[in-house]
Image (cartoon, helix red, strand yellow):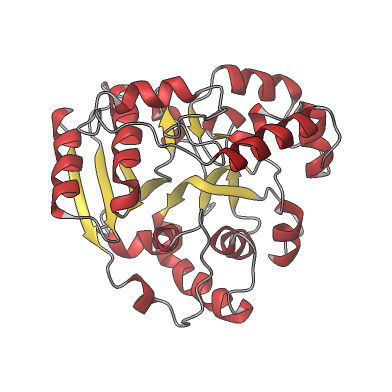
Length: 307
């Protein structure tokens, strides 16, 4: 089993937390290889991440991605506070892993794993390029779908997916992604996710909802999710059960390492951080205004007063 993360020093402790939750809940898995794409990790953080992985008897591979910008045929790489340069390393997974490896799971560092991922990882995706969960509607999703040239099939969330490396290599998917990146000149919202959905359209195997539950699912009703998506993306039963018994939770927007985090699953993430070398790092303080805005927006969404 190959699990791929990417990080710099800013996310190292969150990565350690995610990895700890994953390995703790998958102790019966015969073999787990953790791949960390290094985009600016210090030696001290590499040592701590290695300590975490080896404490579970697993293997870590640190891959140098300091040349990530040079790998792109264009200097225009759109970045935001949430879409950092590390995000784009997932495009190069087939190049970074040995050709003897046929499958790999990418997972963002701001996640926690709640259960055994064996069945999900080894799902029968056939000749599809990736297996992933349909994205959970948020601001900008419709724009991103339109910009990506999306027409049919699930529009997936790229924060966690399983890559069929044989297909990626055979069809030169990385080259296709880079080509579309240049074509759109970095103008797309959620750039990397948009180009992956465009290039892989019709080649995405739909995973169950609980495999990747993103923050909006905990703050929007099922009806709101369907209205914003434009069609039922999962059944109501799967939506409700997925929130109650998630396999992977992605802490987008509401960060559990911040003191006034509103995410209902924050305690789980914080509990696992206490099991890492970063256990004594205090919760981050957040300016009052952003907190107020998040509370107000959450209330408006729940009252159907904001879309």
